[in-house]
Length: 118
Image (tube, rainbow, N blue to C red; front, side):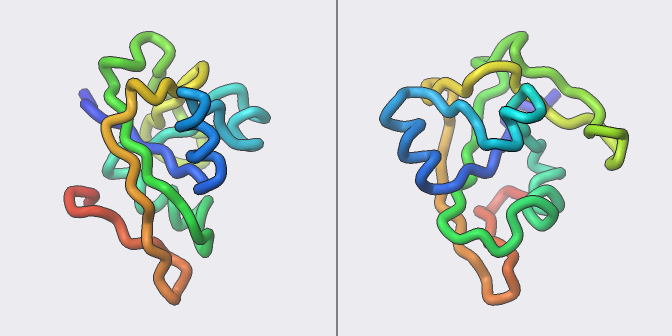
């Protein structure tokens, strides 16, 4: 079982979350009815698919134990990708966040990730 899950948050949204004490998600999250997260193993592919070329992007790591039953591991929408993805049904409390790291954007549009992300 995963101990941490990760979400990619735009800088302005993360600053708002810190001020509010919770992250309520992106427009995509609102449309789907949950906050999209990834495991460490899923993170790079998810970033390349959904956040390529975005400056001021933050990697937010959350503690699975602090998220409780609101976090569910489910198939991707439409079964388009193999495996189960973490979905949070509700806002992400800042108190459940283990770290928030601003990602560097490379010239090719991909992001540099911290050590420990495969």
